[in-house]
Image 1 (cartoon, rainbow over the protein chains, first blue to last red):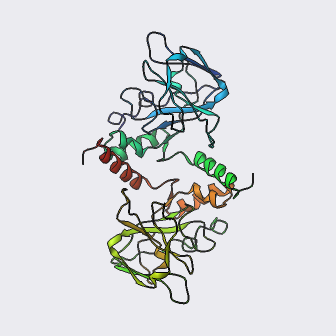
Image 2 (image 1 turned 60 degrees about the horizontal axis):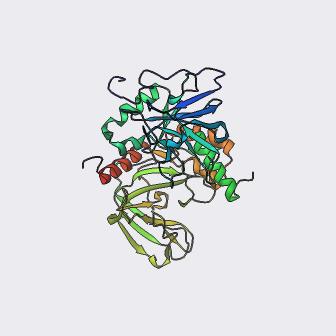
Image 3 (image 1 turned 90 degrees about the vertical axis):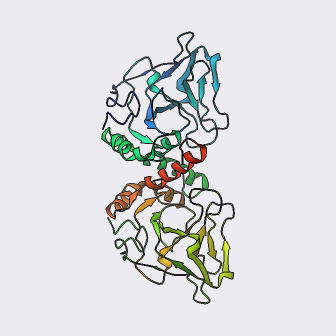
Length: 191
Length: 191
């Protein structure tokens, strides 16, 4: 099945390995000349394969690989003048390199359960060892990017085989987290 | 576990049984006097347990039980003057009895993959035998109605035990259906 279903270059061969004690690295865009460099301190959290139409993906990939880090762990080191926000109305303010198109970091700035977190693509790290993806989100959305609906059973089976339980929204832990935040904000649950 | 987790009076004892050839029935609201009666021709489809905060639930239930039928299979028989739309801005135009609060039918009228379908609560049918629930949707949302987040693992386990695979959105079949409709509308997929 692996031969017929391509998810992402990093996932098709099995998941990348994490390393205990990974303490961060530098994200580098794909430009040969004057690449954007962004330093991230500490490991990533909630790393996952994402099927949404907005996340950056390498050429040929069906899913993105995307994770979060606290905003204060991010520092633009070089060529930040090449960055531009893809869609200022979106929840995630994706800062893309105008040279190569790679999204370097995407902060959530407005009031939201994810406020204060930045979405990043750890495959752009100079170093290996970051926490590997643990689930697959927004799987049905890959149809909106042109995946044949008939291929979905094989794609979900392949994700499950890799240990990336497929969901058509976020995983239950994050969905419960969002609902809990909402219930506290409305006063239904006490803080 | 069944004793400690209450989902819905109809589900807590195990799922109701469907009957091949069920050809419809009459929905009746909970009013003792002048009940609203709505005739439905044919069986329901996509019946499921729903955790969203908007669907009508009987007293004490954590989930609603809700299904769809084509709009042209619905006829208001009696006391339709008691019906009022709960929220005119919502996708589902839930028609509730102003006497008892039961939602009798909810058409989707605007352009949407579900346009032409009405959401109904088959537990209000006079007769048994309608297609039983097949999955659970918007499970995390029950936290927004006050369920303790710590109870979620037991609730998801109980749903799975009943054969109602829990999802925090709709099930994959419907999510793929929505994505396919969207992809055809955008031109990404050919009709």
